[in-house]
Length: 225
Image (cartoon, rainbow, N blue to C red):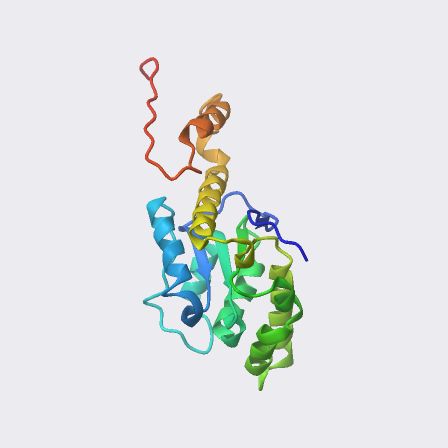
């Protein structure tokens, strides 16, 4: 199965009036990536002024709470970081189910970190073994929703760590593409009273060059008012 290194899927939008609280909601298994790969991703997000949800103060229990559900719903982009032990956590799996059922125009980006997308989709290999262990003693309906969420997220073309020689380049690419996506996710209603503003915004994008890792300054001038 081939996966693109720079694409994402948009979940069908049912509303364009969503009030977003965060730019990005990251879903991940902490022990696998929090102190390594994820820390570098979030640092790059910070450099590009990408506002992301941080779960450090949330107490993790058997089920995800209302605060986490609100954070998922209130994020423009969900970044699902699938690692070897992602499915070892029922919390992560519930998070994924919540992400995949959102219909508020939210986009989903997948990162397959040292795990094969096919193993995620079919719950096989080491990923499958971990998943089966998590499923022990769980309700059949719960397991069914987990399986469906894994199948759905695995079909989203995303970033595959094995396709990148340099993780730093991969992380920079992820952050740059998210920056571009956030520009296009700006509600058009913000400009609907400003005649001709859309064309000007499109022209500005080529000057802003958010794909570049450098400081840029742009001047805008014109008649008063």
